[in-house]
Image (cartoon, rainbow, N blue to C red; front, side, top):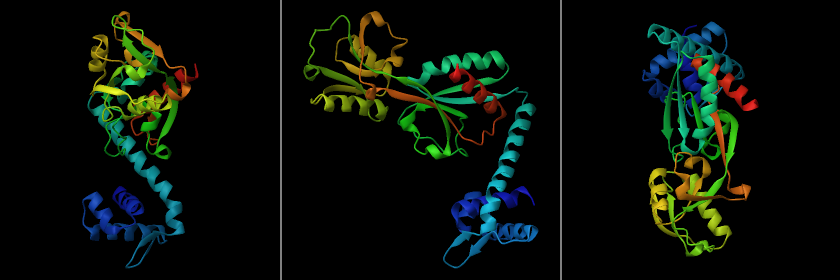
Amino acid sequence: MHLNQIASFLAVSKTLNFTGAARQLGIPQSTISRQIGDLESQLGVRLFYRTKRDVQLTDEGRIFLPYAQEISDAARKGTYAVKQIHEGLAGRLSIAVADACRGDLTQILTAFHQKYPDISVDITRISSGESLMDDTDSPFDFWFIYRDMLLDPESYGSIQISRVPLALVRSAAGRSGKQDLSAEKFILLSEQADPIIYMQAMNYCRTHRFTPQIANTFDDVSSVVLSVTAGLGVSFLPASLLAGSRKSELDVSPLDDESYEISCIAAWKPSLLNPAASLFLETLKETVRE
């Protein structure tokens, strides 16, 4: 039994198609068939039912599947660890974070760095308009994102970090005192850049029975805050996004209704191929419990 046989078995199990599995692995279909046949001979069982119309796992194939995945994961973990040592790294961790969840990451990173100061951490900002990628393609070990960004919860481990309140944001200097928001002009994060916040803003307006006068939308928070500070309009933003703003220039009123809060989570692929990721997960859970 060797890793190429395991890779072929897993690919056919996923696609239930020998041609598709060959295309996925970039090898001839005849090679896939030979490796599956050799694996079946070594195990002494049939792993697939094959007809001209379809391919299905046998009972033996279904039982073998999780063990084959463990073998593949173990090999990838070992390869990752050896590569890190060869490159002279004590470890490297890669994290993706949505803007509104940045504040939650600070305490966790501080605790992690105190325990493992030699592990390097890469942090990449992502938009809430981006969906999570398959772990074979994704460069990230963890995502700090809105819960609603997790399109396939069963494929990820996750833990809730916080609930971020949505706030009405106005210019402190130019505030007119008007309480009727239907008369205000709105400056919003665009739906493309942050569909979750945009949707919450629209839901608030619908609930309060008015159609917002949208003067402009931007793909970045700084442009929204600059426009609001200048008195060009009002906005709805998570309070956590205003941490770096000059709050004396803004009037920030968190919405009392919890239905407009945004749930921030940490998510990860259960395989945790990177050894540094396992250490980070321990620190993450410890910090959240505290």
